[in-house]
Length: 125
Length: 513
Image 1 (cartoon, rainbow over the protein chains, first blue to last red):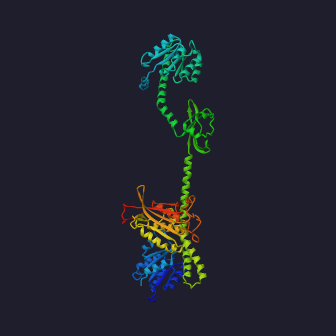
Image 2: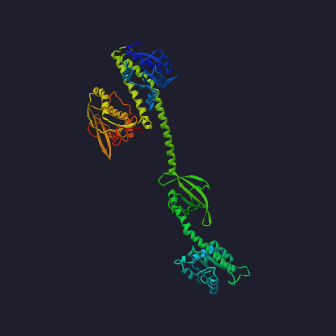
Image 3: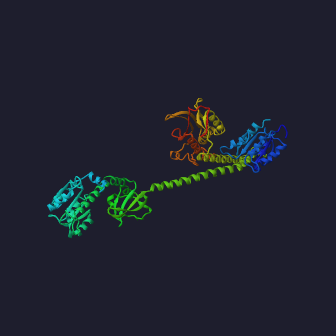
């Protein structure tokens, strides 16, 4: 990843959604990497460290809560901000995301502007 | 004789009436009863004719404990003597005295209600050698009669009276029917259940089937056309001396209705829960594809996939507007479903309303500018705090402003003020528009789900979700606030909402319900 372009890892099992978000972020000048579940995300994080992780909550193999928990327990990864993007909009869902160690939370469907402002807020570099 | 029985007789020795034409016999009977301590303190009144005897009634009827009557009198003979006396004094036990050849007559009087009969011998002083009943037998007979009378009197005075009172005042209908199906007795509760007064029921055939020794539900049509459901239970009793049926009736119409309502409530709760689960699942399942659709449309619209010409932009704008509308409906539906089921995230605190309103107004600035609307806001800066969930308050203000903008012609009003009603301090928010208003007959349903009033002007090209006011109502209810509409002046609509002001709790505490 080039230094001037912040890198974003999109962890999302819905490929079309990942691509839609990714296209927008690339259009805005971000570098984008993809993972389809928590386990794949951890694999990718072994070689590349992004500036921010967009994390889906419910995914096969390893869900976002567990992945975030592992990321935050790893001294090498724990400083990477994690923002949840999830269709779970019920009471307590936000708390669950935050409890797993995530920095922030955005409910699907969301406004692009809201996503960008969260990315700008957390990916400070 | 045991002392107890003696005591019974001692207690109240009302006189005995002896009706006997033969003065000598009368004297000997009197002497017999008065001798010794068989009947201590006994008083015997004598009458020699039936006329004389009848004259002692009815005024002094209660005076006698028993009547001894010789059926053969100078002014009356045989059974007639008994029946006339019995008619006159039906509650006094009568022992008849017959001659040896009239034993059959004695038996006859028993069937008519005499307590006993005594066959007179030649000499009342000694036992009759012919097996006739002698003075000892007469003494025993009288004693038994008096004891029985005493017991019956007591029963009538105490248990009998209480029992009768209990039956009369019972909420349960009680009907006594004889074996031929003729009604003997009806208590007031049964009159009510059967819908007829006593005189239309007694001595007439009982109209309903009598099922023996089991509980049966009867359907009884009442005068006003409603059908009562009556549970009946039949038991065999003695009525007087004869067997009869006691039909206990209980009006269970209301119980049936309650059972029915209970089942309905349980069913409705089940349906509500399923509806909640369904709405929640559907809205969740819809979110992912909607996010993709919205993201794709946004990308197109913002040129992520390349620049668009004005015609293409117009097309994609339509998709954009309506994907947002769909998202709003789904969000509102989920919110409302949670509010209705009480599963919403509800966290109250003492909050300042001014910043919330500022933010809401800011969010609507673009749409107000597009419609060239003027906002008349009257909001004091020093408003008291309200005890509320701030997200929900924002939702209410947003929904009301959204409505007002949709229907306003030129102006929107926004007023916030503290009000006091029945010693309760509230903050009132009034959101108004100068649109066409809402006819009174349509206001009642305004806060129900999916009700949208087609107001004649305004709102072109921009429809709501039909859930906004329903959500506002649920939120205000949750806060023990009120929401109402008045559109009596200026032609437009005025929506009023109140939220409680709490002074006791300072702005430090957070409270979960």
